[in-house]
Length: 241
Image (tube, rainbow, N blue to C red):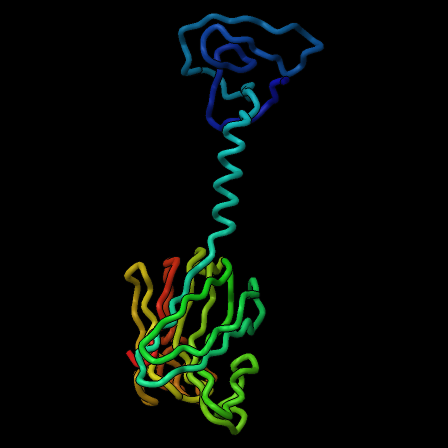
């Protein structure tokens, strides 16, 4: 395999053409003008002019390691545990709305009996919501229903995984904008901020309030104070915490 020319900043050279370790062949930048030279020197620090140096191509092993790391990072899915601590079963809907990330294409979430839990695996960069699905709420349709459509309310959690806007971390929140229907809590695995809402009037820094599409607690607070950011790979949503 022929060596190729690569540029390393601030790497000067004693020969005027490039430098490497002792007793190695220097490949001139213009091979047609002069043949390769074999140079012996004990000075491997190259304390002269800053010129391009010749370096070998990456080995197959290094390339394979890089590919494996890249592939693993690209396939880092996330687990969400849905834990029902209520005395009654809960029905849930997962929606990919607003469809700005990688869609979840797995099975629908089954009804979760009282005092049990269910895990789902969402893909990296998933952006969507998981909402309570009370009878006659209409919330099975992308979690749109509740007070905005004159139907029974439905609480939800909202997720933006691996967002480039926040350094690859995840944005999460509890939203009662479509109405309050069940107490909820989000617990990241890695010890980030826990958010909890157990009433229709829970604090604005814990959940978006019913009808508050501005995200400002009815105009009385900063925008999106209910939202949190975390780099955790897994989360637990507790119903009736």
